[in-house]
Every structure is written in structure tokens, then in C-alpha cells.
Length: 163
Image (cartoon, rainbow, N blue to C red; front, side, top):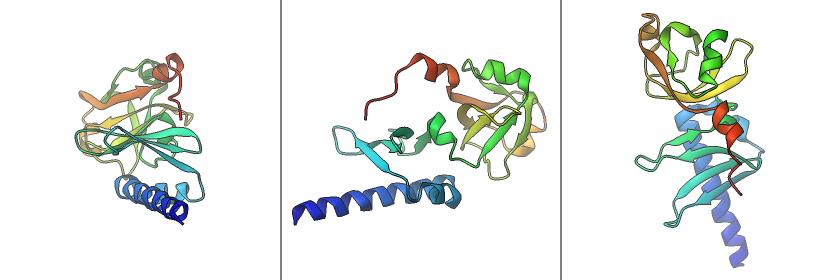
């Protein structure tokens, strides 16, 4: 009987994580997670640290505020995308921030200080980061619009975290 209770607790925690993702990134992202295998890894204190979707690391919990940050794999689930020019994509792949003058288009749901997927003109995700400017401020074409947190360079040089 205790085994059944533990299973129930696991499913309720996974459901809570999906609800947090729906709150942060939209209901569409949570709907994409329906039917997928979600595993949660905890830290020493028993708090959520990593969220795996179908065996791939998709979200990491930020320690100071509990915000779920997407990895490159998690960015494939997001609707909040910013398209950048082909020229800038080569630099962003190396981990550099995105200047506003190279932003071609931003998704309507992208908001300042929110996480976005950085996409090249062909639709390939090259990085994930924090959008610093609003859509109106991007049109000024000055400064850095996105602070890159993870890029393709980071993935090629590292091994995946163990499950």
C-alpha cells in the first residue's frame, strides 16, 4: 500500500511541475508535455533541482527564486522565440549575447526579463537566454537585447548530466 502512495506523490509532484511550467511559459508548453515521461531530480534538501522530459534535461531550477530555466532541449518546447540574423547566429552559437540590431522578429508572447529561445532564420535553436528589452525597445536597435545563458558551444563541450 505504501508503494501506491509514493507513486501518487510522484505523479502529483510531476503535475505541480507541469503547472509551474504552464504558469511561466504558457499553457501550450504544458500541453506539449502531456503524455511525456517527466522525471524530477532533487537536491540534498529535497527541493526540485532538475526536470527531465523523455530522459533529456529540459529545465533547471534557479536557486535564488525557484524559477524554472529551460535548457536548449527545453527551449524546443517554448513558443517564446526570437529570430536573429544569420550573421549574428554564428557569434551567438559561441555564447555571445545578442545585440538588438540583429533581431529580426520576436514572438508576441516574449516579455522582458523572460526566458526565450534564440533561433536562426532557418528555425534552428542556437541559444537560450533572458530577453532584456521589450519588443518596442528592440526596435531602437541599440544595446544587447538578449543575455545568452546557454548556447550550442556549451552543449558540444560537455557531457549530459546523469539521470
